[in-house]
Length: 116
Image (cartoon, rainbow, N blue to C red; front, top):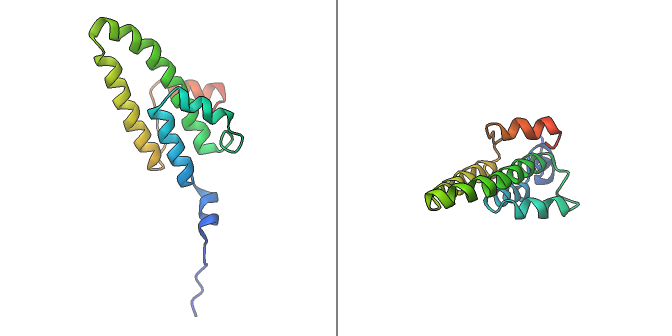
């Protein structure tokens, strides 16, 4: 007989982010700032460490994108807003892979505020 320890899926999810957390993190980046606000209202989601960190970053990024993207889009015909959205999709994909996402300035701000 083998002395290997049998680990169930539930036990594995306690050590890392669940597939559900990864999906919500992806959606938070892609559809920010709407989805992060929804996540903050969901009691079972808002305190999960992986999702909490990504959600706070996605919300701040979404607000920056709205302000900066709107101003620059009026000047440059929407190109900056599209570029910022593509970057957000990339960060969402990284989160979906279970990786930490570091957004220059935003990550430090979110951690400094204690939101992540």
